[in-house]
Length: 403
Ligand code: CS2
Ligand code: MG
Image (cartoon, rainbow, N blue to C red; front, top):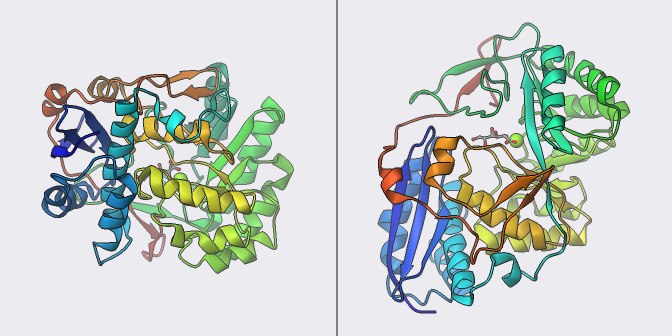
């Protein structure tokens, strides 16, 4: 493979913002990486444009590991979501290029197929228990084997994961964050009823998942995990903010409900203690925010030593490029758990033609060379970037809380 001749960052907003890095080699091949950091897109855009791309021109595109080390150690200011998303985009683009140059789907370079398909989960949500139960049923009819359920909380005007639009959930709205109201007490008193109703309606065959979204204290998370044990969840996600990895020991001591964490992690150091002490069951990092394929493989290898499985983040704000690369990783990694699959809008899918597909509860990356996702730059240009921020959360007394 030859040297990098040019690289450019493409900002587009087909319904929501995406930042894509395109790397082109002297022999005319191109590779793509997703560089979308929801609500902070322009920070990564500038990091790539101003601080990374000038160093890429002329580099040997085949030297993926050396480039990773160059961008990580060479940055001096290590880690962090902006830096690691930029590195992730470069790394993913270089893996895409290497597989294209070899004329094979990316999973073949990662060790080949370890499974026939990638089990995924969809997002069902509703304003109340009855609406959420009905929505989970709709996902089961679409063929999903696993469904995340998020429900409105009685007494709260809104809550995470519940949207008017049932298929496409997009939390980033106004340029200046809107303010949501939260009550852990109201939430804790309502969640068990949802899963009791779901198991009564659908039995124990479907995998059911739930995202707490960082909002409980460790002891509250232990209480919720214990209350949900009769409903055998596949996982309870982000039960408490995970900067203090040690706090998961308290949760673990109170419940056997499996725990999943990591979508906001960006380096192996963020999850090393959680994994080595088996304080979690699934690690949620994915290629976009955790330094690309190269670093995600290291996280997965550490996780495998401790029987922790992967559960890559796959929200709408991760582009089809991210999903494509993640699926090749998912197909090959030995300790695979599940892949999140929040569908993109038809507008987004038109900008990012892709080989991957959904079939009866499983995702398949396809056999196209590389990760199998491209970008229609002319169409991308028709959707200019628009500032959008994630909401902030306050308790009912006004205290700023975790969103
Ligand atoms: C969520 C995300 O998919 C998930 O599990 O936590 O929707 C998350 O809120 C967004 O990715 C934030 O941009
Ligand atoms: Mg989540």
